[in-house]
Length: 279
Image 1 (cartoon, one colour):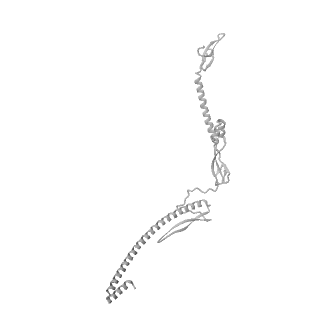
Image 2 (cartoon, helix red, strand yellow; image 1 turned 90 degrees about the vertical axis):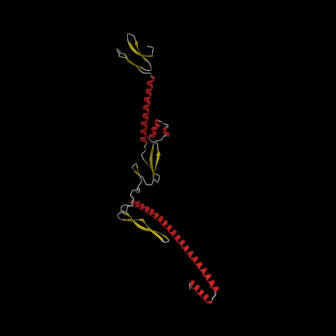
Image 3 (tube, one colour; image 1 turned 90 degrees about the horizontal axis):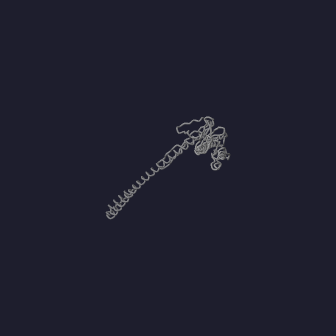
């Protein structure tokens, strides 16, 4: 029986018995009970408000997690498409890749989302058909063989290094300027070292450097020669040229000497180079 009905029945009983004190106690009890019920109702409403706020909070968190999951799945899809493109370029022409959709779902209270993720599997003996606008073709193809060094096919997986060696440039330095041969080695070349340690050297640049050095040395020697001739001419004090109009004698007096026409025996005359003032 509901509590209100019980209170009404007790009130009727007390009225019939004219028990005013019991009726008063009943009224007080009823008032207290109603106050407690009102407080319980308010508490329930507050609880419902907190529950609604908590529900909103959970919904917001679910939305954030959903956005994060969508971004992660998009990145995985991008990576899968990249791997799919690389795998397709590395396969022979009779092999293609077909996409298989897979669904990843996030389960949260009152929320759910599903995002497709594309994976790739190898299918043999089919014609390669590429569909979609996200296929990438600007990647470097996978190298099946190593580089060709001086006409020799080297194995893949090695590294390139640079080394110095004794070549024509070093010999040129040693012949012309010996000290520079030890402190200025200019013969260098690239060397491909395979994974098993075999070295494949390229043609070095020693001959080119040697020719450049020879050209520079010749230019320097030419300027040295020109400077020496100019300095010797200036230190000589000039050259005096003496010509005998009648006898046909021709002499050149250098080092500051002067031409002097002297009389010899038998009425013969000729030019001589003498010190200034001694003619």
